[in-house]
Image (cartoon, rainbow, N blue to C red):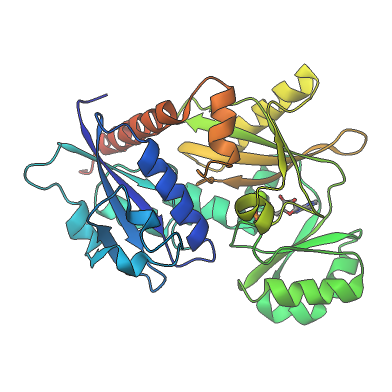
Length: 357
Ligand SMILES: Nc1ncnc2c1ncn2[C@@H]1O[C@H](COP(=O)(O)OP(=O)(O)O)[C@@H](O)[C@H]1O
Ligand SMILES: [Mg+2]
């Protein structure tokens, strides 16, 4: 690890997960080691304008504790200019995007960072885009024989036929309906019958052109944190006990009502199998750096089923990703160090290829 790194924490964004991202960004800025990093905070406001905070330590909480205040934290910047090396700064810059959802976790920001030729934490364009799109991720995981619940994908124009399409595919109720490109349970609902399926579909399609309709898993929710590039490692598995019907937005970020059990109480062979599948999914979906791989576990049914892979997991104090690593022996500040190291490693690895004939 080089002496001092300019660490740019990127948070906010134009997605429905803007608030969550600000909380994650705030926590990372607080925890990062000041001796090691020259910290900068760049917030993307709800209008999509990038703003550089004058004071990175207070940026995400400026504005009286609300999260809808990014317009108050600093002046608009041009990201390509702001991220370029500047005189008087450490030689190395690493960007840590803690942006959740579309326009941050989906490869768009990663493309901008690639064009700026700046090392950044986490998956690149392809891995980010694949994991963000629940439908394409399912297709690719299925092509590699990874276990999942049965599902169908629908485009906006097909939503009027949802009941018939679900029936034709033989899907068994209750069904889960979700926008293909979102997270934090926004737009996700559970439908116990055909009438509810139509309502759930109408909700999901407000958030994306593509939606997923899938069978419910009847079992436990287990999550594993993966860290690494070419040789990714999996944390101990953790279990989520949702407070309500399922693990919704309130549980995740607002009241923390869900219980997180770390490590999950599982037979050692199951635990090993989950870790193996988590690393496999990470590799299949071309992820780098970090991801949280989420499973359902039906002990008396279909066994382990992959739900989804999150390339920018939450970093709030109640978030699973940092907690899983802490329980595996990597505390929060060391986790940031390792993510920065992996970002530099990935950038060096990809810079070494020839660009001439
Ligand atoms: N097929 C399913 N069976 C059972 N519960 C589900 C299913 N799909 C989603 N859920 C519940 O909804 C939550 C959010 O869905 P998820 O697919 O993880 O979307 P998000 O990207 O919003 O986290 C899950 O954590 C789980 O509690
Ligand atoms: Mg999820």
